[in-house]
Length: 320
Ligand code: CP
Image (cartoon, rainbow, N blue to C red; front, side):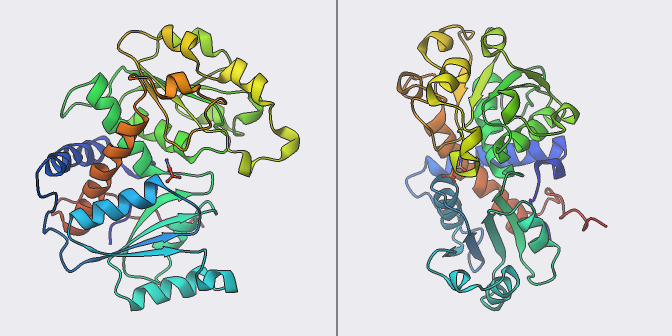
């Protein structure tokens, strides 16, 4: 079985294959009939233990556009609230004949555990695990960047990407750093020292504490949501101070090169990391990222379940 657990599992060729396949899938979305018969008779389970709007809906749309049967499972309202374990939930899905399980979980490592467990015989796709990774978000972000900053079929060599904000709690940041460097981009993280993870100096990127200093040379600036729900209130910066030092407003956006784009994975805290003026400006690709998410997730499901190419890496072995 093939899985997509981490952006680190993707070689440059793997990533380019997903992006090129996503471009093909996007052309399907432009047709009057948006469906392909590719995954007819296959079952995709969306297994969400944590809230989601974009990821859950776009995986559902992606699977349906490939004609798969879709089962949506939300931990809220399920027997998980009665204490049922991940193992027993997985065995139940196996009994339903799941071919792919798209899992979002509050625990870092849950998709990896599921893929290596032997409880299910399905392909596992990580749709966000704790503060660890969100590889399909990184792929859809790369697709968006390539469309604006590069060319079809090409990587992101030499493009300068700045990722700003709550890196400490961001699975989006980690997956993006891994994938963007695989695709040849140069990544700079900008964050308050208290919102950077321990060991960030080992990440393949540079770190800055001065947003204004890096904006003028950025091809894309990705604003991260401040994740209050994962934060101890004592460490929570005041909204005003955070916005002043690390928020993107109209003045800062004007300092970007003319071709540069503003990205946000969503959901946004308008007025905190991004002003409404920037969020609603034509330079902000947040809505386009959501649309690209559907074609990217179609590509991932197609390559895992239906495609002939050995594109996506297997789950990494269990740590000793
Ligand atoms: N970007 C993202 O993962 O959004 P959701 O939490 O709404 O899925």
